[in-house]
Image (cartoon, rainbow, N blue to C red; front, side):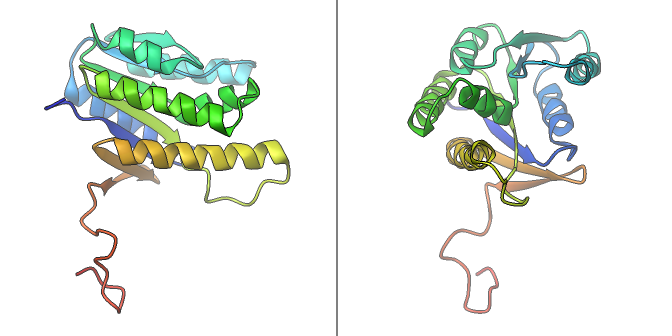
Length: 191
């Protein structure tokens, strides 16, 4: 829809991605902001993280907890929201894998998410970890998670209007990208 801009915010752990995403949402709307949390806190430390995030957001945010069916939540919430912040896609992928969802099932879930974004009547900001910069994990489930997170990030990045990577607390916009594939000269310089 015209005027609706969806944003993907990527980064490593403690890179500032969630803070940037919240600031972007706060800039888009003063009220009717929905925080769609995919986290399933299972231990005390994770519960403390969730509590800290809730306190940081403040009372002008409504929180909806949904670990799996985020497309349905976006469909329902966009009717009343001025902006939706989904935090985060990597926990969502983890939740899907823990339900023994295979690659085809996860890609089908991404398709449902893309359809929900296309139907959304308000901006959606999606947060995700960039997990591909580290070492190759030693076990199959961790490698599957890394690979699926990367594939999901690629699919979502292609579908949204803007992609921002946060590094060391500094947001860097990478889409729209002024350097297009095939537009690099022989010496590596943008044309």
